[in-house]
Picture 1 (spheres, rainbow, N blue to C red):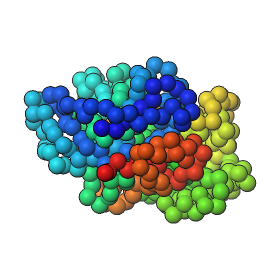
Picture 2: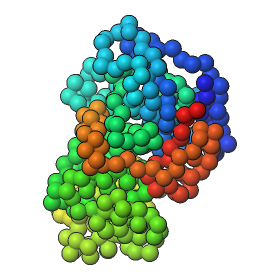
Picture 3: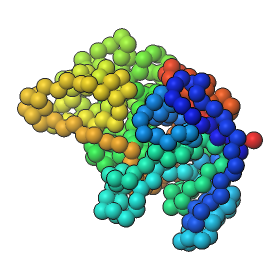
Length: 344
């Protein structure tokens, strides 16, 4: 079988398509024939050189496919060979207090596919049956692969951390990114008024198309000032932040009294300045968030099946074009996810 692997860190040239033996499922596992796999910014960071990852590493945290085989020497499962499934992008211990309280992303043994453990950008993968979800019949393979990691992350930020409500005003950074496009749709589905940002007219149109009420071009407008104008000088209740140092001053300006910034990333840098006086005087909150859990994914599936949320992607490439896929994501040419088609 084919598998996208890195044996060392560096540019897109380190991405290799290796020929490997098809793995065999252990007890309680399924062998899944992958039909589509999606990229995340995590892939770029891992390729460039995050510490402590196992090399060689099969890349990719998101995928969907068909169950080819099940090793029945384990607990009974609802799944059968031939079922179309989505692969859950993490593992956890399943027995600690956090896992038993539906807070799996707090588990000290939480691992992300394609980071701490081997990933999904391969023709076949083995996976424990409890980390499978049924593919909704109303979305195709590409959409099924596009949603798990980014949409789970955005759902957890908005619903579990910020506790978004229908009367909230939400600022989402980066309408065209994976987490950004997910957050726009999720906030809108919750009934919130949504402001988002984009770097050009094409991406601004995309932001409006997926549900934003207002789009601010961060290349030509001051996001903090414009957000205050849109909200009549009050600011927003919630900010979905994953950009970091470049956006942080604007986020602080745009946040209302009692508002919440939820951050899950720092793509432009992690060093930011906070004036604590403004933070406590305005009674604001800054909340960190990473990934999500099965509760988030199952909630998302319901919204997808009801077509309140449609996972978005802009590029579908064959597995052989993995280097080009990385370049598209790295250059910011995508609007939504970049997806690999593994069908052949």
